[in-house]
Image 1: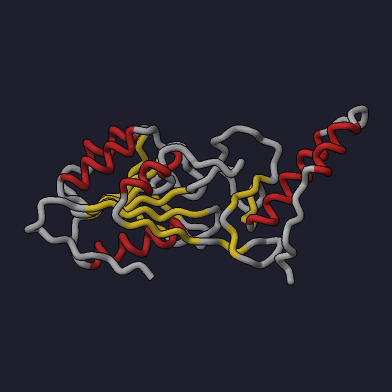
Image 2: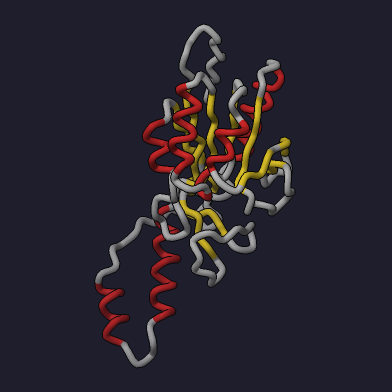
Length: 221
């Protein structure tokens, strides 16, 4: 379990903590836990989230388990710098949806002595690094990767498989649109998508895919 450092007011610099993982892995839950502990310690805390995320509440960060904390929705990362100048601790949820300036903002705040806690998806639904998250993970002092449970195998899941046909990179959704999958389950699901897209009059493409498919271990054993 991650153990928080205490804010040292004699130390000039703060630090960055990143909580990352797939959908339904408990990222926001862990973010809220750390922020509430800081509030209990009477530290000045501000929480921010992207303005586009209004799935549960317009002005609160809410986990899938309905745990919540008051937040300030902002349209861009630059707004965080303006609103968090006098804070001890800054929390940022769904960081993958912010523009790349979030990287500079987080580092500027940490350099001014602020403890910055960031939560976000490390990969998009295609399995690629998501937005500014790789750079945030690289510059953070502490990175916590949390896992969901694969809905197919019951093993650890770190992929967010999109069940809907929407191909937009930014597409907010819940269990109806996404499911957490393990590596093998995700690979099989993506393979099935490729096969389904092949037209009936192109059997040679189907043959190429099936011939180049590596054997995947049986995770259910």
